[in-house]
Image (cartoon, rainbow, N blue to C red; front, top):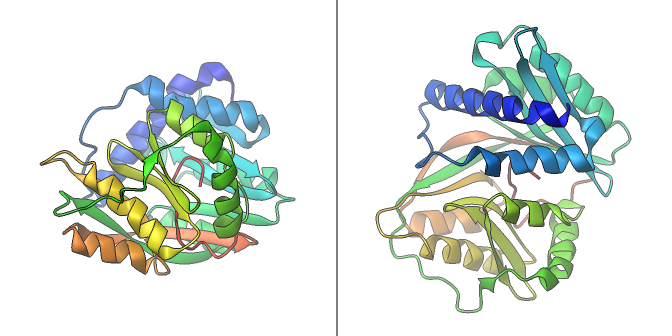
Length: 278
């Protein structure tokens, strides 16, 4: 992928996700997002992992996109999308193979898989263990934030790195700054964990203990304006703390996709991963 591919690649992502939402009857995003914010992710990964960024060109433009990252020896598939009308034609398989090649020397791997059976089969065949997840969506009721949770500060990177190593085997590092540049709000529970959300859609929560993770999630939900919808995705079986908060705040639970893991990726608890930086 080249830098001038980014706008078209972003459009393919938007079209593919909209098609996925229609096919699985998921809610559409509440508001249209500024494309320039979405493109921050593409340019961040193109800068840090140029050999992990691929597009398929069918002669009429970008037909598919794959973005893969490697952080401290852990590989992650940030994005794999194909234009809806060209799916099941081998494009996704070819892009996925290139992405896997980029992470050939990694000690661990992470993929956040949609409910699409084609994707789930591909990841299972590549040696990933699939861990089904839940989504929690709705207007939160009675969420009470933790008084100790505060806005993120640059000095919080040290805490985040330590938490990330404990729960997922590798730090996010400056990827968290890229999240903020893309419009996310980051919050910190000093000494215990951090959270990020974009327009009340949780992008990641990581903490040293379940109590801290639950406090961070409640604090995100407590910030939601009256009548607005919140979304919490990638709630795996080990994250009972997140299910408890979702039930207590009357969010609607529904089946999601799967977290696909292989190798050394830590306990993945207490942890809610995010699609862009895993």
